[in-house]
Image (cartoon, rainbow, N blue to C red; front, side, top):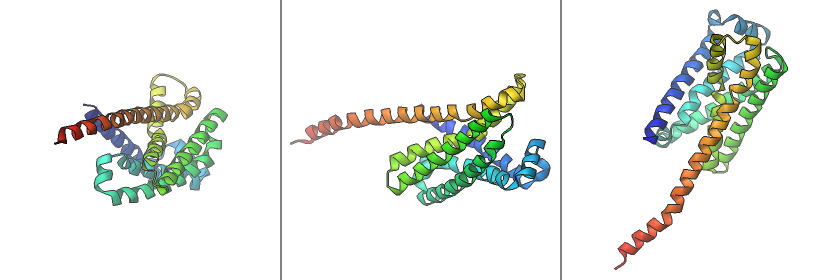
Length: 221
């Protein structure tokens, strides 16, 4: 049952990520689709805007498939190729985010929230790369989960903003809060998920020696 729920959660996450990625690509390559705020962003800081939307969209699209264990084990070469693409996309999107953060609307609270998101995004991805280069597969997996949880800030941002408008909260009040809310809970949930998985793995490992001893005793002549 738990495996089914995890599979369902992956599908929901992937669909949402791909929808937001498609939106990011659309507003990057089709200017007529850009809302006024995005149009101004491209006019004032075009290089950073391109890096932010294209890099972020590519990270969303590729990162989701990196977290599918079945695909990873079946097509290791594809996993490595998508992983390299993801790292480049995060590097481009993260540097662009740091460039854009000081100019965030509504002031310093929003700016600091997005700046720390960009730093955390780059840091977790860098640590994931360092871990895989050292053949530390478990650590690599953990850092990638944290990295993609931060990538999903692009999804949660686009959930919270319309929700705040429906709730009647003014943009100037909601936006500084959402600049933090879009990624801090994501990262905390990722950490809780990893702690739970590690606990299950340790429990399974602690049960393994007695099981093997039991098998050995039954096989004795």
